[in-house]
Length: 268
Image (tube, rainbow, N blue to C red; front, side, top):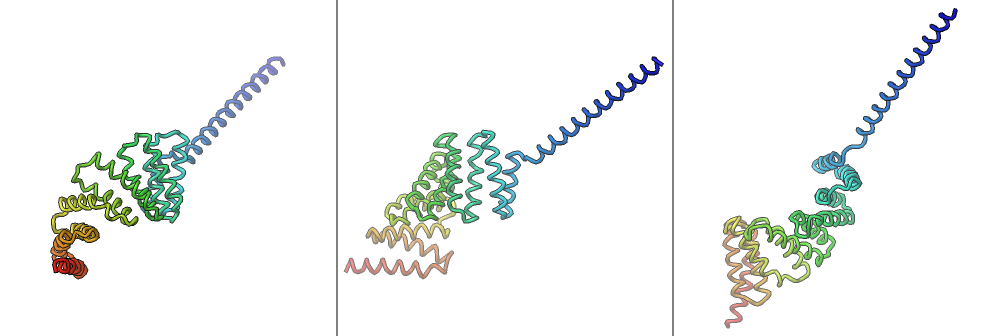
């Protein structure tokens, strides 16, 4: 009888140990499964940004904004280097612009500039950020700040680019536009001359863009009373437009006629 009782007790202990082992195994399995599910549910900040950029390309700007904002939050929480965050903020600024969210676009580009400056005030990464800033200020008719941002972009481009580089044209155009919007076209002479030389260098002497620069220089000379110079600029522009842009010939001829009439009155 004692032997039977002993065997029964040993059997019970083995069953209890088996149940305990099975419970532990089940608990571990559940823990691993939950851990995997959680890791899959929280994408990496790079994946979120990548998804946002894909949505941008598709024109799904609301979804792009959601992904980019989430990606930036995750990256900021992880203390990612600001230099890496700057282009993401720029993307977010452009998305907000597409969504007609002017304040959001402004805030994002300011954050982009602050992030990029962690790499120094003269970082090349700042160039597209200052250009975006200049465009946003211009749209808000804040032409003074638009010009300041454009000048910063142009300054940095001049430090890193060849003096005749085509890359300078965008910054020059932004500076000229902002100055003229403030009725300060008279200050743009050196910029227009630089623009003309770069356009001649890269597009050739008879390109329509060269004619535009010549006409702008003609208008500037006319406003300053330099009539012979204005006549020469308009003549050069007219010669190009007769070859390339017949639709603009009439207006250029009118400009030239007006200047020549003044010269005739002056000589008479």
